[in-house]
Image 1 (cartoon, rainbow, N blue to C red):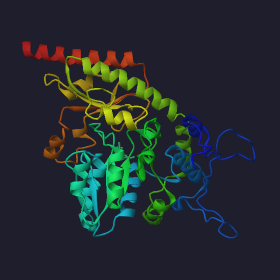
Image 2: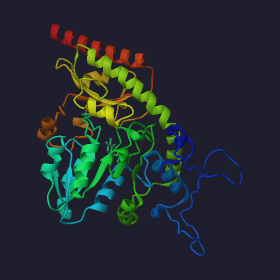
Image 3: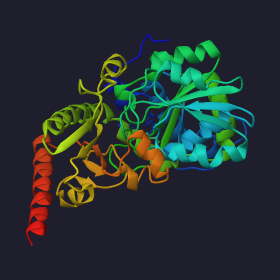
Image 4: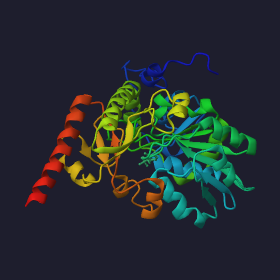
Length: 392
Ligand SMILES: *Cc1c(COP(=O)(O)O)cnc(C)c1O
C-alpha cells in the first residue's frame, strides 16, 4: 500500500486535486451544486452524503496525509469527534478516555453520554496500566489525545494500541495538536484519527472544519451515522481548506522551529515558573514524543510566577493576541480556565494541573525575536504597574 506514497509537501500541494479539464486552471474548480443527477450515474451525490466532487477530493488528500485508506470531513472538529464516537458506541457500551482532553470532548462525554446509555471512565494517568485498569467487559473504545490540550501531556500510542489489540478494542486519537505533519498515529497502530481542521489544517484562523481518517472498514460505522447527523462541511469551506492544506507542511515546520525557540526562552526566564512543551528535555513525555513525533509542534503552555497576573500580562501584549482557538499563522494566547476548559469544574481542572494562571501559547510563524521582545515588554509593564500601585 505504501508504494508510490508521495512526500509530505507533495501530498499537501497535489494529492486529490480536481482537474480543471475545461480551462486547464492550476487549482481545483469549486463545484457549489447541492443538486446532482441521480439517473444513470454511479454515485448519487449530495453534500450530506459527503460525496460532492470537492469533498471527495479533499478527503483523498487528508487520507494520504494520515496514511489511511479513507477520510471524511465535517463542519467542525467536534462534529467529527461526536459523530465518530456515536458511530462506534451504543447504549450499554463503555469507553475509556484519557484524562486531560480537549474541553469540548470532555463536555460531550460527561454531559450527554449518560443520557444515551453510554458508560465511560477517565484514566488516572497515561501508562498502559492506567488504561488497562479501566477496561471492562463492555468496553469498546480507547480514546486518547496526544499531545493534549492544554498541558501537552504525551501518551505512548504504541502502548495504547497494543493494549487495545489484546482486548479487541478500537483506538481513537485526537491528533489536532500534532497535525498530520508531526504525527501519523496509524503507523503506531491507532485505528481512527480525528482532527479539528479549524487548527493546523486550516492554519489561518478563518475556517471551521473537522476530519476523521481511518480504514474503509472502520469508516462504515462513521459514515452510517454521519449522513443522518448531518455535520457536513459547506463546499466553499471545503475548497478553502484544500487550499490551506497546500501550505500546511511549510507552516507547521516553521511553527515547530519557532515554538522550540520560544520554549527555551520561556524555560530560562526567571519570571516563568513552568513550561509544558514536549520538545524540552525536562518534559516528562519528551522521550516518548521523540519516538512518535516528527516535530514537537507549535503549542505550549506556561505559568508566570504568582507576582504577575496572567490577565494583566495578556492585556499588555502588543503582537501576540489574546484570543480563542489556536494554530493560526499569527501567535495567540489564552488562559484555558476561562476558555477551552471553562466547562470543566474548577476542582477537576486544578487536579489536572490546569490552574487559573496557566497560559496556553499558540506560537505563530512570526520572527521569534519579535515574540520574545513582546513577552519581555509585557512582563516589564505588569511589574512596573504593580510597583506604582505598591508605592502609592
Ligand atoms: C479545537 C479542538 C477541538 C474542537 O474543534 P472545533 O473545530 O472547535 O470543533 C478538538 N480537539 C482539540 C485538541 C482542539 O484543540
